[in-house]
Each structure stands twice: as structure tokens, then as C-alpha cells.
Length: 565
Ligand code: ADP
Ligand code: MG
Image 1 (cartoon, protein in one colour):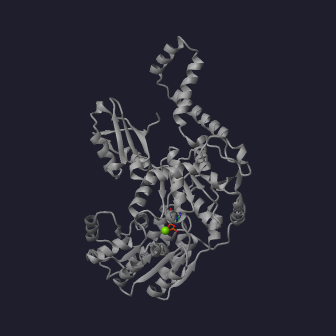
Image 2 (cartoon, helix red, strand yellow; image 1 turned 60 degrees about the vertical axis):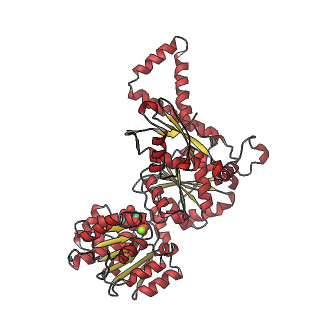
Image 3 (cartoon, helix red, strand yellow; image 1 turned 90 degrees about the horizontal axis):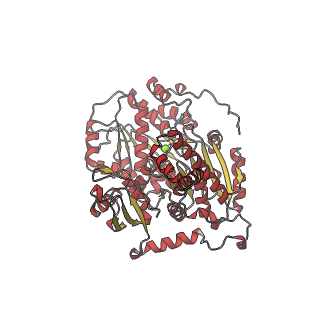
């Protein structure tokens, strides 16, 4: 639905007082106009004021502080290269450090201001070398910045400007003391900007302690919501709470998304949903605040590089991450706060692509949907959950398309010989149908797909008999894996065997080394001439498959998949 454009004054970057080099850098990036936080913050920072800024995810905060920072350093004139930083941006996570450093690097193109990211889990030596070469702008996580300060490989005595990005998240992660220690090492003459998604009292306390007479800028969320949504189609299915996980599997099977984020309210839900999807054959990865940073980085890397097709996340864990290629956002619940919903679905439909947002709503969440529609002035299409028959029809369509594609590619001579031989005994149409069946069944592996998901209101008695609800299944899985003597195993098929000269040691080594899992995650191994079967811990299977796909065993790339026998 169209929302009328708001009356705004000139909104180009050339009206903000930035150097021509910066204006052309953002123009080259395809930014047509400054976002509200950029329009409000850039002049304030250029005038040398301290700033406290509040704006939601995806509102363009990075440019709002990075452009004035680069402007300031560029117009103050270059300094001799030393280890001494002139601008410091502190961010909560390694992922954000990389992301922000990359953005700042792009904005600083042509300004001759080297940008160096510093985060944990990366080589200290390499970072020290980069600092020695001369780093004008540092983007760092507090822990690693403090490490370098203590080793005196980072020197902040000449710092001209400091930015605290996602300050609320840094406090949530327990960096308060680190921040104080870092700030203490900087000159009081520095300019300071603090950005956060909320203005909780503890944020204001940090501002009061470290900022000088800051100007406060708050960007309301509704405005952004109206302007940001149009490319996302929105659907909701009503599903009773106890059938949500089964419905989730069904929806994913039906949509066959290229890349999806599933949002859950809690960590427990994240784990349950990840389990269900893994059992469905998806390469699903969990992302929540209970995970170590190293694990989170790995998950994000798998998802970004499209080795994992589904990311299952809590709102907090997904906050601040800028991911471009997401085709589907699926809400396991309807958030009661419309802003949360808008944030979630804003993860798809980016960079001009079409996106689809699907919400699994309990009947009682109906009013949340209504509120959201009122606020965003956009329609959410309420549909019945796709049935097993719909799913089967959709799959047949896809098999049809695949067979067609193969026919069009040609090169079927050897296969024609097989058909000719069979044609002595069978009808040609039947032979073709059998081959199509093979393709179709190979694609249709999902065990839970046939799980009956009753519509709300449907009674127990009408439920199909003999099926275990998904909930029970995942609960029993969790119990089993909790006991180390009773790990749940799945079998992987690896496309290399005796003929390739492969031995058990190669397989265990590749799995333990590349997937970074313990050797105990590998069970029985069977090696035949042409392939191998390896039992692995079911919980780690997705990770192991993803890692092996990018590894060579005995110098060869190998195919790896779940064994379907
Ligand atoms: P935030 O930090 O507020 O979550 P980011 O700074 O990460 O947001 O920006 C989100 C996305 O919007 C990035 O892909 C960025 O390149 C893009 N972006 C930022 N400013 C603009 C603008 N003025 N016009 C178009 N895209 C922009
Ligand atoms: Mg940001």
C-alpha cells in the first residue's frame, strides 16, 4: 500500500556540509538521500558537539557517525603514521567490527585514512602489524581494544573522536568496565558520540559520565516503518501453539526458501526449532545470546556464505546484523510490539529484492496482527496453512520443472540406451514415469512433512492417528543427547571410499579439524569401494556437512550428505 511521501526539506548528502570526496563516496555507493538519523546527526557532529543518538536497526547509523569522523580527520590534515589512532569506533561483537570497518573503509575511499578492525579470535600479530603500518581509524570490540592498550600496541593519546556504537548491547554484554578503562586512556578533548537502540537509564548514565554536554537525537520508529516495507509481502497462518514446530517445517517445505531467518522469542524455542528443521533435512543454524561469540561468528559465516539455508534466531542475537540475501522471514510467533515485527521483516526485501514475511500466529495473537496492520498501513494476508496436498502439488511442480530443465540441457544419449533396453519390456511412458518418481522421491525426504497440523478449532478426534506430535519428538531427542552414552546419531554419506585411498583416520581428521568438533562426535565408520558411511552426532550433523563441503580429503573435494537409505 502506498504511504504519502512526507514533506521533507532537501535530503541530499550535499546539503549537510560534508567534503566533496565524502559526498561522491556515498553517491558512488548508490545512496540517494540521507536517512533521518544521518540528516539529524551529521551537522551536529560536524559542528563538534558530543551526541547521543537513538535509532533502530537499519536506519543508517554507521554513516551518521562515520562520515563526520572521516570529514574531521581529513580536514584536520593527515598525521604521521604511528600506532596512534585518531578515530575509535567501539562495537559489541566481532561480526559488527568487521561489518562497520568495511563500511567505514568504503566511506573513506579516497581520503587516505587507513581503517583497522580489532576483534578477538583473530591473530594478535597481524593486528599489531596493521597498527604499526599506521591506523587512522580503529573499529574494535572493547575486549580486544583493551588487550592492545595493555600491551601498548594501541595508543589513544591523540584520539580526536570516539564512537560507542550499539552502546546498549555493549552494556548488556558486560563491557561497562572495559568501556570505562578505554575511555580513561583517551584525551578529554576528544569528541564523543554514543548510539543505542534505547535510551535506558544506564545508557544515559554512561553518557552523563563520559560525554560533554551532548545533544540528544531520537528518531521515531513509525516513520521508518512506513517508508521501509513495500517490497515485503506479508502472510500469516493461524496455528495452535502445540503445532507451531510442525507448521514451521511444513511452511519451509512449501516455500523452499533460498535463505530464511526464523525468529523465535526465546533461546529454548530457537533450539527446538533448529532441531526440528535439522530433522527435516535443512541446514539450520541457531543464533542466540547464550552462545559464545566464536560460535555466533561461525554461524553468521555459514549463513552469509549460504552454506546454511536457515538461521534460527532470537531478536537480540540478530540485532544490528546487516544481511542482504534473505528471501524469507518466518515468525514463529507474532511479536506483541509492532516495532519488533517491523525489525524482523526488515531483514528481507533488502537491496531491491522481493521478500516474503510469514507469521505463525496463535488465534489469540490476532489483535497483534491488527495493530501491526494499522501501524504499518500494510496488509497482512491471512491464509490457511498449506495442506499436505498443497505441499505435494508444489513439489510435483518443482520435479516437473527439474525434469524439463534436464530435457532442455540435452546430452542424454547414454540414458536413452537405458530407456531403449527397458522399452523391450515396458511402456515408454511408464519408464519415464518411474524415472520421474525416482527424482521426485530423492527430493522429497522430509520425514515430518506428513505430520498432520490441525487447524485451530479442529478437535483431537479428527487428528490423524499414529503420529507423534513434533514437540514430543524434539523433547525425546534432547533427552537422548543429554546423555553422552546415548548420543543420537545420524549417518552421513561421503562420496569417497577405498578407491580414493581414504581411511577412517582421514574422515575423523577432516571432521574433527574442519568442523571443529570433538572426535567423540564421530561414531561408526564404514568404507566401501566407492563411498563411505559415517555416523555423527545428530546435533552437529549440519555443521559437519557444511564444513566437509568446503574441505578436501586426500586432495579431493568430496560430496557429503545425509544418508537416505
Ligand atoms: P544501522 O547501524 O542503523 O543498523 P547501517 O548503518 O548498518 O544501519 O545501515 C543499514 C544499511 O543501509 C546498510 O546496508 C547501508 O549501506 C545502507 N544505508 C545507509 N545509509 C543509507 C542511505 N542514506 N541510503 C541508502 N542506503 C543506506
Ligand atoms: Mg549499526
